[in-house]
Amino acid sequence: MYRFTLAWGNPHIPCPGDRVLVSIDTPGSGIPAGIMALWKPGTGYAVFCQPLLPERKSRRWSLEAKARVRRANLRRRLDRKMPLFAASLYEAEIAARPAYFDGQ
Image 1 (spheres, helix red, strand yellow):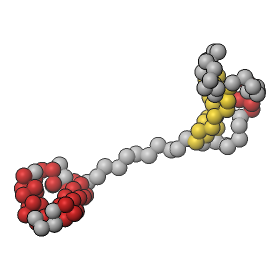
Image 2 (cartoon, rainbow, N blue to C red; image 1 turned 90 degrees about the horizontal axis):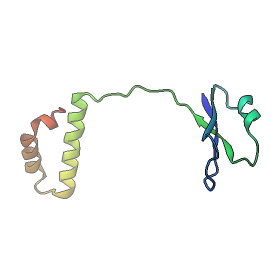
Image 3 (cartoon, rainbow, N blue to C red; image 1 turned 90 degrees about the vertical axis):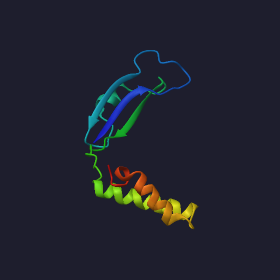
C-alpha cells in the first residue's frame, strides 16, 4: 500500500496556495492518474511516494523478562566498571530496589 501526494516541493519559494493539493492511497506502486493529471513540471509541486506499513500491535514485556534483563544489565555494568566489588554491589543493589529488579 502506498500513499502518493502532490505537495509543494520547492523549499526556496513560499507556497502560493495549498501545501498539499491531493493525496491518494493505492495498493499498486505506480503513480495514480489523478495525480498525474494535476501535476505540471516547473510549478514547484512535486509527487511524493510514501509506503504505508501495516500497523503492528506493540508487544509488552513480561515481568520475568524485564527482571531478567534488568539483572543482567546490572551484572554486566558492575563487572565492567568494578569487577572486584561486583558481587557485593550486585547484592546490595538488588536488596535496595527489589521491586525494580523483579520487573515491576
